[in-house]
Image (cartoon, rainbow, N blue to C red; front, side):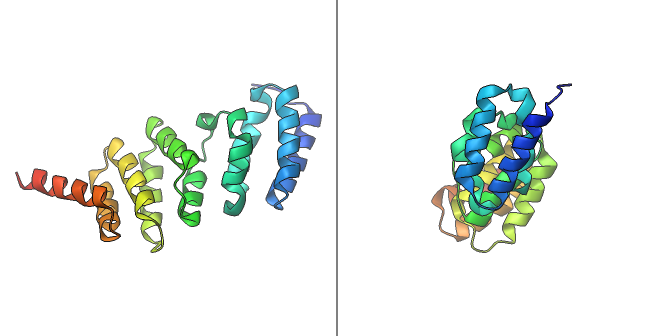
Length: 173
């Protein structure tokens, strides 16, 4: 177990307060200072926890600025990154990476939960539905993946319609 200096914890708490209050540049500046003077094991856990509490309005802006300084794949709360993608109706590299990590970690239950919650959002884009459906397929959940693909098809996503038609043909055979 890594022992973290109280000074680093204090600075990280200051950064968290700035980031939670929407002062992105100030919070990022502190995080970047810490990344230069500490080891990843001293701050990675904190940034992972930050993802769970940061407002979705700021999530991708923060990840764009500090995402390369920590190991996202060590985080256990990646669901919040995907949920922010759904809320912001944004499919980007962070959402795709979070989905990939959830798949590689075998987090089928988290992906199923994300899929169910996503279906409640009528405004979500077809591309996000397809991305989540693909992640569900990769963990072996064809039923929920098909449900998401049908919704994406209804929104005009041709890739989703083709995938649904392919599944329908396979199941009839």
